[in-house]
Length: 249
Image 1 (cartoon, helix red, strand yellow):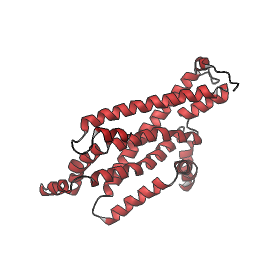
Image 2 (cartoon, rainbow, N blue to C red):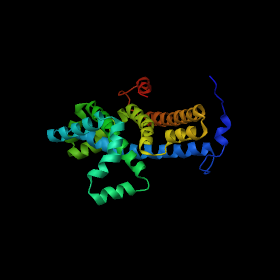
Image 3 (cartoon, one colour):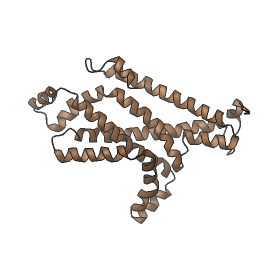
Image 4 (spheres, rainbow, N blue to C red):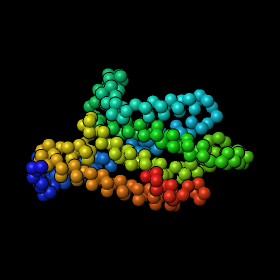
């Protein structure tokens, strides 16, 4: 294999003269973090709501929650990304569609919405499973104390459920970081897109994607360590063991 390795490429000035190639990758990392964190907050809020609705007594709410989950979970993420970016603006009124397309960060907003809705369906399943794993006596005890259904979920069921599902939530957090790479297809210059740009200009393909891989690994290791610490602080004795928690990551 005749390939000229050049690890000093990262300290060379990029063609846009905005900095070195290393600066280019770090800029992509910032976009990856911003996209992942924004989408994660959105997915966590929506997932908690939809997952809760999946466990309420009202059947029409359960059906609505199930429809949400099946819709966003069963359509490939890449297809959803294209739908949000190319199709949704065309379905809106002309003024609204033109405004969305003219936004300076339309690719970022689209990626956040797409990843947020897609991941919310997966988190909703985890939340519903967490609530379903709780003893029925907890709900009955809350009702005996005079708590309303909303208060029961807010003060009793959801706090317990979220403590139990921290391991699978960690996996979803890691997934949303990795899935953010799909946003390069709509023009978001996140980490993978920056690495691709670097190899196109410098022709150092192995160096570019090796660096991107190491950055992704480092970012995910930080997430795992933080989530492990969170799990240790909020773990419920008797509901999950440390050995099982590690397997979920």
